[in-house]
Amino acid sequence: MIKIILIFTFVIVNLSQLSLAKIASVIGNPITNELYFEVNKNTKNYPASLTKIMTLFIVFNELNKNNLNLDDKIVFSKKANQQQPSKLNIPQGKSITVDQAIDALIIKSANDVAIAVAEKISGSEKAFVKKMNLLAKEIGLKDTYFANPHGLPNKSNLSSANDIFILSSELIKRYPEYLNRFKKKKFTINGKTYKTHNTLLNKYDYYIGLKTGYIRKSGFQISLLSKIDDKYLLGVYFGGNSARERNNKIHFLMNKYQNKKYKKENIYKSTKPTNYYVVETSSFKKISDSKKHIFLLQKKMFFLRDHYHHIKKKGVFFVSFFEIDSLSKAKFLCNEMKKEKLDCIVKAN
Image (cartoon, rainbow, N blue to C red; front, side):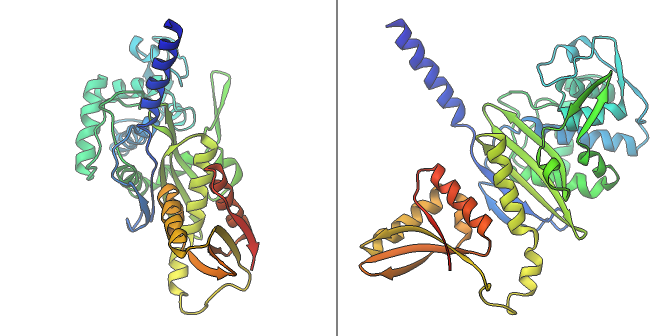
């Protein structure tokens, strides 16, 4: 009986933690702040290591004011050394440079480095957090409160997809000279090499990886910048069930909206692509059932809201479907639907 109670309690606790991780996303232009896509953009959630975007923002600000130099030493206190992983495990009293700290925050997402940086700049974590929140207010973050400089679990450390978009955009516009730091895939310190958590950087050279994040209560998150033909696109995604799912979904959305401006300019120059693919999503004898099913699909899978569903009668059945101009995109969407135990078929038109 005791075992049953313990198992039941464990399940309830874990379900309650998972329920806090809500899917939210924003895709837009970080230079103009124009949004192309949004879902649950103001939903408050735990930003996890995306918190370090603000920590880095302050580091860059201090460097530009000449309050810091890249070769300045950052000494690790007892508190910094005692932080939970991910960390560099620098012993108390030992130091790294500001230059190394930037790589450690971006690539390793080191929590001990975040505390050491906070103490270097403001004298204490508490004073640094105050600076974070004053700056958050200054740049217009309305759903954000920072409780620490690293993003480790704290019920007060909250933000939203839209606020992370605004914060990332401000960093991009104010400190473009440091963007190349986010493209680095690895760094070495004290003879040990650390590799980036952002595997999209290894697959696509047009991505400038700002930051990834994860704690159990938040799910897998990312703020991701791309640059193609001198055009920037920024995407934020909250609440992935895995790093792979998060990467697949942000990559799909980024690809979809990368050429939005071009598509707007050419909207009257073409009708339907020569080669396109049909994704069939249901087949019912009543058209009302097809409409209900489309509503269910778009409610359950937010990125399907962006695709117009058609209903066509075939014999005695009403078939719902949408059209995609890429076989890979069509298959990706169908696979995502199947993961949710929803039927679909991809056909060449």
